[in-house]
Length: 213
Image 1: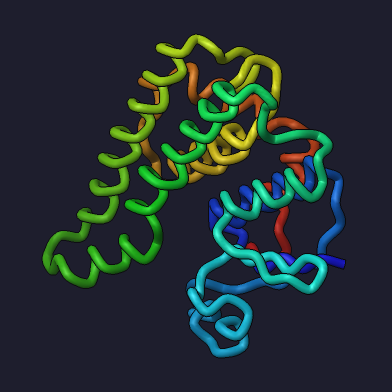
Image 2: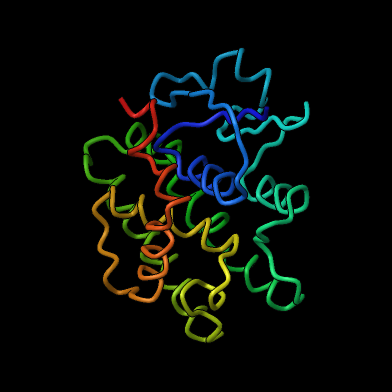
């Protein structure tokens, strides 16, 4: 049995739950509360010394960083594939995935938002404005890439569900949670909504998780 250390509102944890669910794999959930700072407790640091969720233990090996874990899952459990075989299509999928994982999410991570609130006194709205700004910047780039490449269809790569879609759906969900206006990115949002409605995705959504209470 593999073990996933997760937090229901963490979009990176949501990515991993989606990936595991789409692969049809079983896993045991270990809930790590970020508000309670359980990710900084020694018990979790002994698992992942970086102190971040998600972390996956599979076959006795500890894996961290969501994009790295998704690629591991694709290599260890090839069906259904999350990366195409064509090298240019694979680069395209990685490009989109990294727009989410490297350009958008790190700037809007809860650690950054907490730091802003603590270090910009007297500006109660700084975190929300910051979040909305970088969501807009990031999704504008994502949408432009989709339109320029012209490879999208049902999903980011035609009708093939890939790592890019796994990254996108949680990020759109988070943008909505923070009341961001995403109407300027209709192609991006439509793809994310189709992904979110898949049964394998729906069953691991944040509002289905036991630690949401």
